[in-house]
Length: 157
Image (cartoon, rainbow, N blue to C red; front, side, top):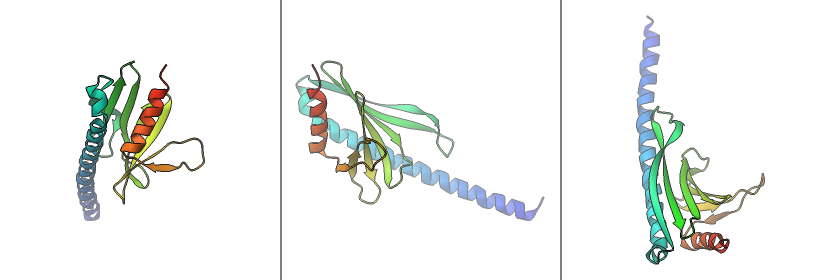
């Protein structure tokens, strides 16, 4: 057995171990960010929940496929169900987003809005794709969230 081969294998093993640690840390940080955003959204919805107009449920589901480190990935969801059964679903779908730390999809019927945590700014923004052209982005805050939810509720009978 060549000593060069053993040396290369040891170096690659160490790189792999470091990569696993880094990826695990990244995933844990992402989970914290997602849970904090969901906590904030539930706080914004508290008056509607108190009036019996909606309820929400948070859960984690295994995603199809595996992470680069070989472990299962989890999808953290928040489902908001209104009095008539209509739902808004928020799904943490991706960590591998160019220019962003991660992405959550907000599903309102057939509408899909992407909520991105920006890497450098550490702020949440939202965007909605309409085609191949560049989509506008907006700050994701209580005002924009309430505007989107109001449009959704206005579509009820």
